[in-house]
Image 1: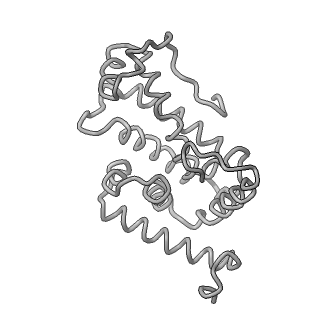
Image 2 (image 1 turned 60 degrees about the vertical axis):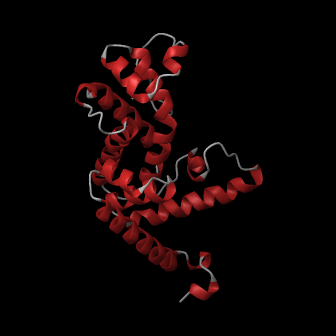
Image 3 (image 1 turned 60 degrees about the horizontal axis):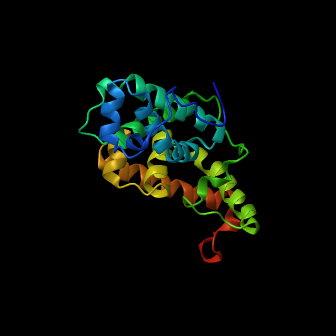
Length: 211
């Protein structure tokens, strides 16, 4: 499987009509056999999807594999896609489930930080100056260390709600659970992350909050 970038399904060059299609139009066209329409969806969502999955997995390279697999499954399942859902939520649900399955299959929690993952804590479209890169890498290293204490469901809910800024209802739809369950996962994730930070990295806490 190609690593480091997404392999877009084959198609011809997109014209202006394809570029300006909304999700519903692109899905309908893709169902009718228009590869360019699906390629438009891939380009539209691959970046954001990769960012979210990379945060869940704490692994940039595996995240690209999951994103690629998610698009392949979406392509194969287009006929079963329920248009009552937004396409983006349906796609994120596929990718999140794949990420959770991958986390569960690991023999041990991965703590290594892969090259190129420092972008995971940047605001989209924002490029920090070079002097701040070390701080971004340190934040990412700490996050990768700390999230090992979370269950896959807690990690996914926390990433989508707190880091990606999704509404609770959208997170629930993407994860296939209730809003109450999402709130509980996020609450427990915050609690565990605070406890783990205090235990392993007390130097990063304000003095007033140290034991």
